[in-house]
Length: 429
Image (cartoon, rainbow, N blue to C red; front, top):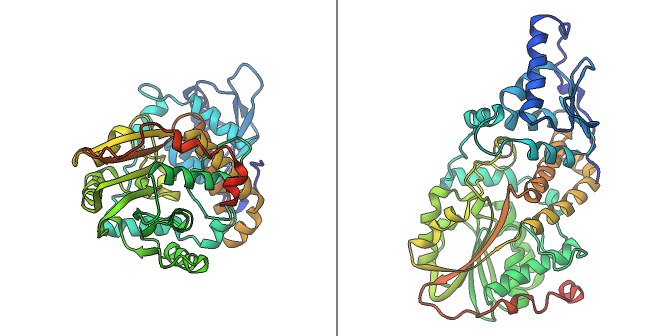
């Protein structure tokens, strides 16, 4: 997959460059060397605006970072988590070489805790995620998910438009097969059967609800605050002839009403915010029947850490991937028993690889819909996410739970895997 894109000279600081001599240049040279030293001298060269190249490694550099104006250098030094993404998107910083390799080299080199100039700087400039009140949640979701349905249909799977981690029963599975396998995986974990009443918190473009109704005979009520997604999902339910079994409601999860056999949330918890986990637990307690069970599927972390500043500001406002410890706030207040925890992080890395390959294949159409800055920003976002899952910076947790006194669950996990062996079957369902 290509990491190359058109550059944006119009966004570069075009003011006359002062000669790279004197006191200012002496400071800037120290800044460049300090950046490399803070990264523990990775095999990355930095080339500045006048062509001078800096490198501290022992073997030839694998990637060159070209800083095209001094303002970009100063911003990168002041707040690398935020300004690298902005400078890359506008073409003021160019990665010469494989973008994924560059991101991984930087991620492996960054100090993870304590000590180090970049660690100190990151702690000073870190930003708390935006509060997810009812009003703020609508704004945050609109920022990302209402870009346009057409945009997402260009590169997500063609059948159920899943913008969440797929499940690859074999490495050779296609994205469509892996997303269908994921939907089966969720339904089997829930023990879904005909006639079950399901409530879904955050439904994307409605694929899971459609799948549950069509293949498992469930009755689904799905809540979502993205108007574009609700309209899309409702129309698809009519097209598939399951509108009598799937209802899409444009409302916040906090306003879920009624009682249900199953509660499910796939890819929404990242947008809830830890401060609201107890409230989510109250909602589940209120709506889940005594014999019911639930599943929550969420990006997570091994230890608490804020979302990358650039991702939080430009791509996913209000997002926060929780740790397992933080997620237990949802369950502990109401005597819910956690039955199963599975980490699918390598499945998410593979999902993202498929998405990036498809995104790159249609980047011309994306550029026509938005602009070059958007294309580069999303390429960086998808590439950085692949790196984060491969290196264990991000996890993907699936948690199954029920009420403490409920003993109606399988003794083994055999039911989850018995039909995953046939990709032809997965593709036909």
